[in-house]
Amino acid sequence: MSHISLTRYLIDEQYQARRIQPDLRLLIEVVARACKAISVAIGKGALGNVLGSADAENVQGEVQKKLDVIANEILLEANEWGGHLAALASEELEHPSPIPNRYPKGEYLLLFDPLDGSSNIDVNVSVGTIFSVLRCPEGVTDPDESDFLQPGTRQVAAGYAVYGPSTLLVLTVGDGVAVFTLDREQGSFVLTADRVQIPADTREFAINMSNQRWWQPPVQRYVSELVAGRDGPRGVDFNMRWVASMVADVHRILSRGGIFMYPRDNKDPAKAGRLRLMYEANPMAMIVEQAGGAATDGHQRLLDVQPTGLHQRIAVFLGSRNEVERVTAYHHEPG
Ligand SMILES: O=P(O)(O)OC[C@H]1O[C@](O)(COP(=O)(O)O)[C@@H](O)[C@@H]1O
Ligand SMILES: [Mg+2]
Ligand SMILES: [Mg+2]
Image 1 (tube, rainbow, N blue to C red):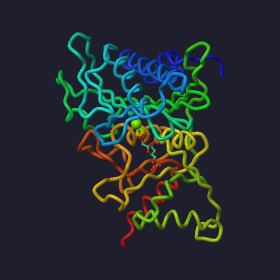
Image 2: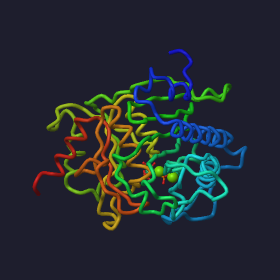
Image 3: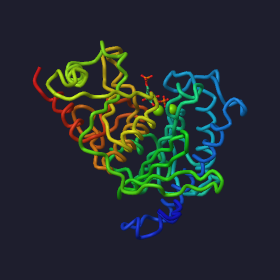
């Protein structure tokens, strides 16, 4: 593949048959620039004094890592004056953040998980950034939380960056999924895979097995059949992987197939799963569907869920279509 930059991908009709609005393109470029800056900060590791805890808690009662705070600030600062947003929302902020009046405003809403996989920061394992772009409802000049509560089908773009052995940006604007690799010398994201497809079948699954005793019956049944391998009803062996960074687990599935599960469980019945709908589940669901996969909460398509809160949690099953359909069907069986 010749050298196709993110900008060229976003404006060239060869890649974007449905022309995307210039302000959406510029917004995505601002997010990509912020991800580059986060990648540089992460790359410095202990030398940049970015590891360890920030001695603070976020809105969800989780202890923030220094990099959670740094990544959040980089994204806020880059996007506030970008001129394409009406407001933004982050995992690390209780309420949406309006664009200050001194900056120009635009018509989009940006949501992000600035640093996904926080528990992996200090052990030098891949982490990432996840983002979702919605349109601000018409006529709204000062959006509040209710304006963000749109189902995932309304996303106009979604993506993630993985900060791993190389830094990647994975993007969909509703017309397939493209992967860009950061050329560290040039400082630019270069297209390295386009129209990525997740195989419909897989022999690999991802779930945190330590939660097994709290799973509900449909997940118990599905995973026990996978684990039984060739001696069980599936008649074939399955392999398991769990990075504990959603971005890294989803990226593996995008690259070679698999099913990712973070189900609702009985550990804390008040919690509807661990992952957050608006800035983890929805953008990943859009990417996975755009790559030919499927994404549900066990009962319905994730992208159809009507959100009720900015930090709402939800069960997630996503990846290779036939496996996601099977585990979803188990949820629908009586008993
Ligand atoms: O600790 P567990 O149960 O393995 O959970 C891992 C999951 O938690 C997350 O790290 C949550 O994301 P944050 O780091 O943004 O809070 C996911 O990336 C990952 O899939
Ligand atoms: Mg996360
Ligand atoms: Mg996070």
